[in-house]
Image (cartoon, rainbow, N blue to C red; front, side, top):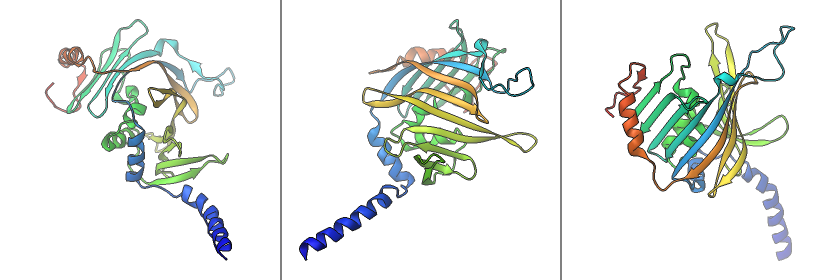
Length: 271
């Protein structure tokens, strides 16, 4: 009888295990799990960004099947990051000339475009994967909100090819993110950009080619799509963790740049 009882319990456990494995987490549960997996505190990341024309057409007037790169629109970035406190992004052209300077130090926030011929908006230059990697829940929430994901419902999503993802947001509305359910790495972020004629374009940001550095995974490549047509690809060319950031020099640079007329002081804080 004891053996039969053990067998029945084991059978019930086997049937219950898949259901347990795919039971949706709460937002707080997910944040707790992600916090345990974050190992970086300060990092310097360099990226190379290629820009493409997503609406280029061939001789027949049809959208080109292969992405058409615009080399003159490419740029580089140097990103300084301290978890929960500092995010500074220096966006440069191929010759090293500064195109945009983003400075975020606790409550101080400055975003400035420095080239009238190549205006960059803040959303064009933010490294979403770094902010979402934070061990602080508010920063991870902000990373999603910056890409249009306000609703934080957690569920499991099975794709058409039977891959299972962890979903954050409202899948039906088109504003959601997909994560690897085992590692909690970002797989993709989805949003809808509304047009004046009440139609929209589907925006998809794909994080791929994950590598591990100093016990922390990160996406080597981030690709941006409009209606499934590639328009930007950011590739991490160098990354290293730091014991401290060169904040003094960067703060002095922000002081100088904030007096330019093209500066946008998003929050009226004194630097």
